[in-house]
Image 1 (cartoon, rainbow, N blue to C red):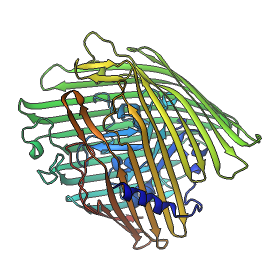
Image 2: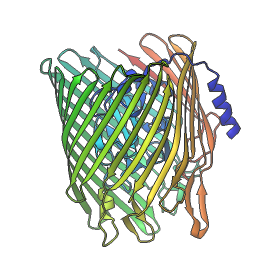
Image 3: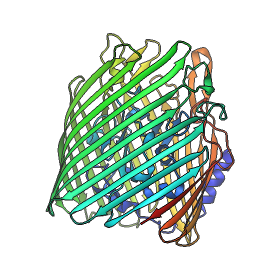
Image 4: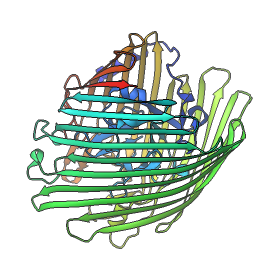
Length: 616
């Protein structure tokens, strides 16, 4: 298997370092400073998954799209709609802040603060911004590993829309449509999509009783320009999903027809923006509710568990550009988080947390230095919690563009980020203890030449919030959790071919006792080769290699489970039948590889999906 991986790398490196197809540095992102900014003007490590990539690669879920990004690995508990865990640079879900148009998706009622992003429709995504490295000094608690910000589509100019229909394996059907209108004064876009799939068994064996998935999602965005300087906007997102799965304690195992989860999510954003001269200001209010009803069966009887959460956030952002490439940003934020967890008829556990914060960022560009141009960034944030110890988070970074070698850049970032307990962890704290925020200190060093980059990163987590299986409660563990690794990525074009590759290797990933951390893949490799036959037609092949991964290791009882290493291959094809009508076909896992991302749970075998889209 490793020989196969090395062959993939060698084949990709044969392409000469031609100019990249897309200048990623020119892409505008909002996650680095919470305000619009070009990637090249930030010291942060940024990856952007565009709507075009999502369509061409045929990703079936946000989970799949994220799993192909540099520094990220994913574990799933089955097919579409099932619980997924993200690992960014070896750090777990609770350290990654996931946003939808700025709305926090991390659920305070989950055991590890994971985000229920598995229900977000791909049809309405404009781009997914991935910021690696501690970002709590900008975004607040929960961003010690980084930020994933999912941005929905905006209206184009004029009027138009699209209709798309997909059909594929597991009797999977998807319909989606959008309408938009854009003018100098008003921009409106509405999207609606439905998914229905019979699926496959969440637990092994793969061909046991199938676990289906249904999802109806709607999104509305309205922006109105009061004049040339003032704008107001409203975003509304609605999700209604049902996921069938196999209960962990079900006596029927993989043939469990009972276990399912109903999820209803409503997100709203209201914003006012002012832009005049060198000054920009934004007032943003977000409101998100998630209601999840989970029904499962065990030898002890039925379990009916409801998870209800509400997150409200009011943010004031300001930026003053004192030169073309330098600015000061500052703001304040109020956040209220409420989580409720109820099991059967037992009394519910409800907790509400409040967080007030002030923050500031300075970005200064030094031009005409002896060796080129240098960007320096510094940010600091003070969080005032009502139930925890108050905390500071900060970050400082620098990026240098060398004049002597065209395309050569070097950057460094150092950060100290804070993560507070969520509602579930607070409710389940060990009796007699009081949970406090933990902190992550880390740094990364990047060397980039044109579209080839290498990054070394190191993170240390202090007093990590963890569940103690011996004491049956959450505690702040003493000691240091350490993770170190390296990332490599490149994109090259040669005539009509485009080759992309990213690779992540973890040198060290151990807990406070020196034990290897579970569920992390030691190596992750993604390779894609696309051939553009003409302006209307392309064909591509992709491969993903996942290295050794420990699911759990109970050394005291001599019990250990691993998911092993594997490589999965995909083929993608797309063509424009007419100017407005397109066809895309995606073949997944073409060699029908049997593998697991979570021990004992199924993954998709060989499958094929086709999509017809009409734009008007």
